[in-house]
Length: 108
Length: 118
Image 1 (cartoon, each protein chain N blue to C red):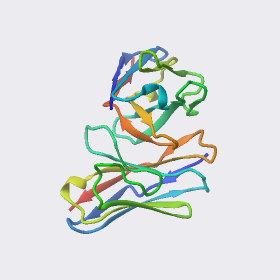
Image 2: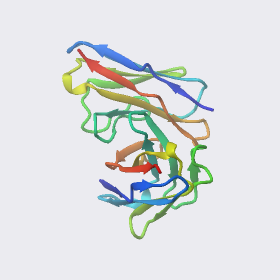
Image 3: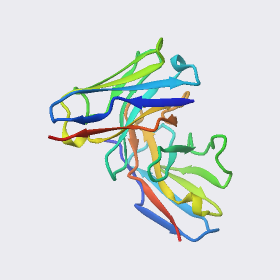
Image 4: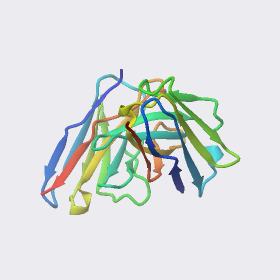
């Protein structure tokens, strides 16, 4: 089965850059998506198709892809960025969707 | 875009429940729709997807044969019929709109809690 692996936690100080990786256990033709979820709230899409940013998402949030790893980068981290972040993709056929286990971003 | 789930609640193991999602603010019939769940204190888990015209339907292995996704484009509504419920199905269930020409979600509802317990 297709799996995505994220680090459980990432900690950074305000103003620094946070990088959250998402590694696939196999090559997939499908894009990756990133969601931000704050406590007791529904997830919010922050990156789609590996590196595209929806309207309303600040430019300091970006995404990139290399091989079987996608990375979410948050530059100039602010307290409001503290949240859980999930990557998501699908198997090569696009039939089965998979979420990574999630990464808790802590702003020190 | 607004997605409002309903139908959650407490149900005994082996029981059934039907979730609904009322969509508004967009042309519902033009988008695929999805159900994603989150067990208490756990991560997100994809449950099921349905194409805009209901031609393509997919399920996670964990719910295949027990859950049925459907939609009524005339009523702008998405449904999830859940049968043979188990304790491990306890979760907040989110209705989510599919991204056009992609395999992701761009809008989420606020979720409805399903608790399976005796």
